[in-house]
Image 1 (cartoon, rainbow, N blue to C red):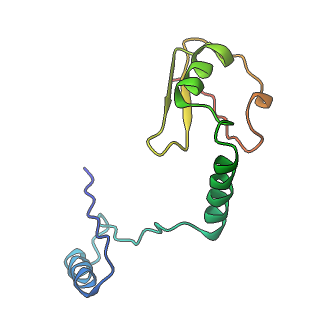
Image 2 (image 1 turned 45 degrees about the horizontal axis):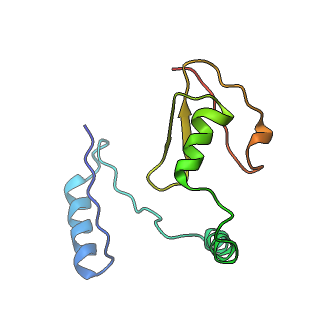
Length: 117
């Protein structure tokens, strides 16, 4: 079983709590304490700003999630199920048979993974 304790502030009180947890954990191999990098890199910020400006200049260029989902389920793949991750960074489809598509059906920077469960 895993437990997560998330301390989001970096003030005197939160550092005190982290120090107490580290002291309690000692050298136990089953306890991992690490600091997450949660901020955006400068490259990510530039990419998001570029995309935001694109949307402002051309608000009708994109597709709604319903259109993307329909394309995934029927037009592009004939898929049986399509969904988007909570952060909207990933779209996936589930298929009863192997989908027929070309990598050219997707933007050049797309990551495509196929496997059988």
